[in-house]
Image (cartoon, rainbow, N blue to C red):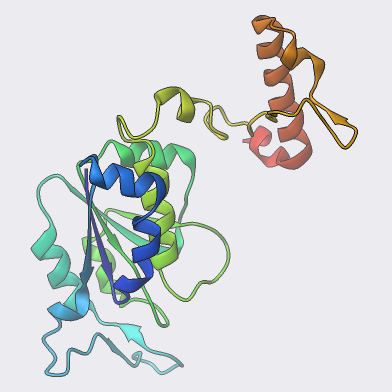
Length: 221
């Protein structure tokens, strides 16, 4: 998979993409990630990429021309263009799975007070990672890249992500490791019983219980 990220702040990605699973996936050529500063595509003499909004109002709005030209330069027949915006579809695990099957993603990171609406004319999918405000789309882009990269074939074992939270609409079951007892808190006896059928039943029951307690909205869906 190839992922191109359009951003004004390439430096924000360096630490995240140079550690852990993403770094290993890049080193093993499972994913190719490029950071593109769309200021380089500006036709303004001073490489300007934002301007004041028509109709008045505070803040600056990203101009259509630099982003349009950047996307057109990068886009191929198999590309999917993603715009990170508060008005987008809420991001969920199923979307991560669907996107992990794409060959080429172009992710547009916003900044300032928003985008020129005409940018949406070249976008295939609008995504929001939550109902809160961030300074830009860089952190949401990191979220997408992390959640998608770990699902690519050979990056982690298939069993690992098959058992993730949300895969079956439920939160994950609780897990434990050594020591068996700590500060009076013990590992549930069933997990040390060796009875795999009972362990599986326990885990399924715990997933249901935890989801009912903490995210009842998932069950309602």
